Image 1 (cartoon, helix red, strand yellow):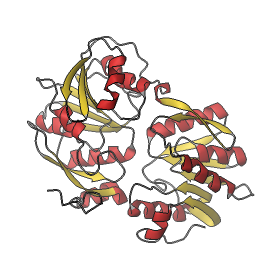
Image 2: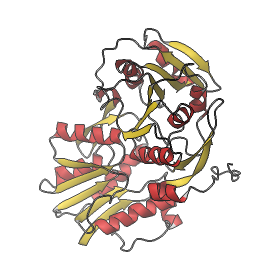
Image 3: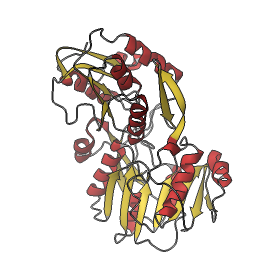
Image 4: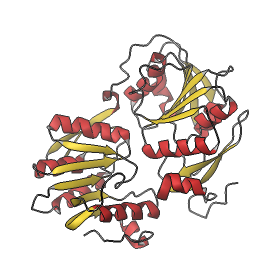
Length: 380
């Protein structure tokens, strides 16, 4: 049962399980219930900083009410989040092979944990960006809760890409974007469900000529940071204050080039690429948990001919040796709660070499909160 909402604040959820805390670390937030007519009622552990972390999205529940009548032999839940769509389907039809894919490593960890906790043996959870690694596979259904800010080319890719896998596609989308879907002119597209704020569309299986590895569908525009032209994906931060803050951090960099540098929560590459352009002899490592961001970071690095190593991990220090970087730069997660910010700050401290320097952006609210816990060594 969901606890009562604090006045003016977010929903207070039941505490996450001990296994959730082990699987998700400081991201573990609480539990929600996925309950749609005709499907088992499932308690799901949710992390901070993912879509619908306070309650199961109404679009997801609408899509569950508008699936084909006959159970599939296989399905793909593309953009699975913590499993609110794919796991109820897997629980209802235990003989169905269910593959859940998400670009966010945090969502992947949460969905895999929930599948394990529920004892669902027919579920496989994978990290992936769209259909990039799925071209050789075939499914009966592709299910997708289409992101609101992904852009029309990517919406076409998500819908038509399912056809390339031999699937019938069922997708839910916010009503503001329904006209965009209809304007795509996809043959056979049918509107099958309407909710308070969402629409469900069905696209029957049919031949499709589409490059499933095409990352260009996510490109929104180009922007500039410290003299570098960067390709920016949809879903990237649009806050104009963000680049000003990154510029302040860039202006504070040491004059002497470090031998190694880590840029954590690197996004599509502004800071690590600036580091490499400024310190050409420096070994620069960039970390992020979002595969869309890291895909564009690599694209930008190739275009600028800047050699930056990219790591896709949940937290900055995952898999790295302590005290191994003379310079650590990054920005703390603003939307993931104080425990995550404290962990990121602590990771920066642990990775900092003796005599090194860390430059880490924190919001005023984070500073006032004092974070939760203290790192053993304070970055400078």
